[in-house]
Length: 405
Image (cartoon, rainbow, N blue to C red):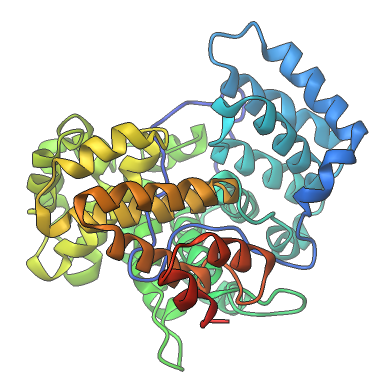
């Protein structure tokens, strides 16, 4: 059964990737095709593309949307990797374009269109540390967005997806990269099941729980429920038409599920409660809908969301964290700091500075300890990024970080 592909006009929606709580945040695969952004300073040809696009978009009232439209057009003449490099140059010149998730979707989707059979390799070529996982999502969804699968067809395709997020070929993902991949898998299965949440979450349990004890089912559930509450493109809106509950229906809608599934459903419904969430009291009330054992995870997820919604503005985030209950204040600072790195590796020093701000509230220990954990979760031990993070941490966290190498 086929459905129409709608690509005439992009619909803008609230879509900020939620944290992969307990496992990590979003990140893009780091593979042999990793882009050496440090070497781009001498790449004049790609800089010229960036300058041309910036000039074309300078008169727009909202430049990021223009960049989302113009940069993908370059893939007719340059590779996906080079298009991301152009994006890097645009971001260096225009800081308002740090969040490029939508663009990541489009660039990998176009690359998959060139050779659909090679889709699994395309998603492993996505660059690390930029565009908040948009590239990974776009590649997955482009492969499967055209048709719905019957139950029999879903069973047949499982072997193809079973190793999708596992080490293979030149791809040796970190735990964070794997978690991100399994989250994207949650989005993908919603496409092939025609947004059947029961079938999709069962699929997550069967694929994301590994024989060696690793369990990525929670982040896969997140992806499935995010598809319901946070549509991005026209196809997403068509997929969930008539299936998204109204705000007042969220408790009963999510009440159909239990345990981790229910927790994912509730936390992913945050866009419907955005007005309340802008105040700390509203956040506490929102997370009170979850069971007590899941409440900590809800706080973590929403702190990641708020950090990006506040456009990584330290003053706004500090004001929010300082006004929240002391028992979760440290987590607020810590989650915001790690979210900054996840959004863009260029925010590494900014995240460290934010933990320094947390010191005036007595929460720097929790904040810096979280960065130490991510030194070998977001990055690989011994990598350039690992040492950049560790070497910029103050003592005693500098020592703790380097000991993880």
